[in-house]
Image (tube, rainbow, N blue to C red; front, side):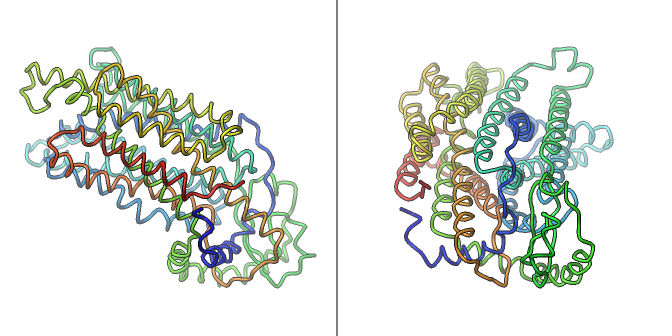
Length: 531
């Protein structure tokens, strides 16, 4: 319904997208399951580190003495940067001609930023204490270092999802994209569950904690090890071929000798298997160099303008998908970011503002610990449901999966808010996993379906010559992922105000339920599904 209302916008998009057609002119080969699992390891490492941050970032910030006035800046700066920069970098990666491929250089850079951010926020206080003797300067440097680490990690970890999805879409066939997304969701859940489990262990009283210093250093050791190993496996999973350029005035008869080169004067991109048995025509390469410099100059001057035009001319079905994704992540983050606090204050009846040796504060801490186990249940069921999705999609389709994920989450959070009970709340945490798996798979499956449909239309219809480069898969994935950052901005800027007005964190759960149910209606009425 949402995709049929504006044919003019759709034609504008298809015309722009035609420039990207040579990025994927042929169907990539089918990938073995092992390669798709290796590709999914990046999501395992990313979610493991996310879980560690969720368990430790608040204690770290409290331990360095961060003023309450700076809390909102810590949580809002990263999503604001990501929301502004992600589409730009997605567009640049669509035209990247690095020898290592289009996406992997960005994934590697963002992985290094995640590692550096963890090092700063988990070890910054210890390093500053060892180097700075003056108490006042030590406090300033400890707060600055920790804040920088949290913002850097959040920015990179949020940002990296777009390039990872675009990498999968670039090198996999249509069927493997769907399979790969399910593996992504599966290992996302496993990584989160393992991170929460390790975060729940009291490392300070174990030998490893005594050897490394504090539990913060122990968690950095595990996080760095998991992140490095997972990203090495991911980057070595499916090789990419570099993007190449062939001028439009070269005849098609000259070009087939190298299948990585396109005869229409554009960039041809795919996996390395497409080109490893071919060779480059040297005359073509020399001729292409003459046109490459002017193309680079055009890209530098046109990238922002063409990007903004492509986003404004986004077809209605892409726009509706982004709005539905925003509804989903706003509801999900509203619940998840305040869930442990909700368990401590509402379910257990504790008080975080009481004296630290009081019964009320100890009760609150117990509720927070049980809340962490609830988040672990969410991660486990996210993995299990991502596996079940593969069987369900043949019966109820993507529309049924999308609708059911939002509906179950909305009903579950509503019941938790209306009837707060320890055991029922922990059982209903399984529904959080259903929503998590839905958000990580169904929207990107729909993006893949849209791309597949447009590629078929371009093969069947005459090509439309457009003078400026348009949107590629990187921009589409980035636009969708931007909704996560926008949801973080809305949650971080709005929920604190709601809690202050209502005087209770129960309003957070009720808000999450209401937004999810509104999103449920939206995905049923406005999101377009490819038959």
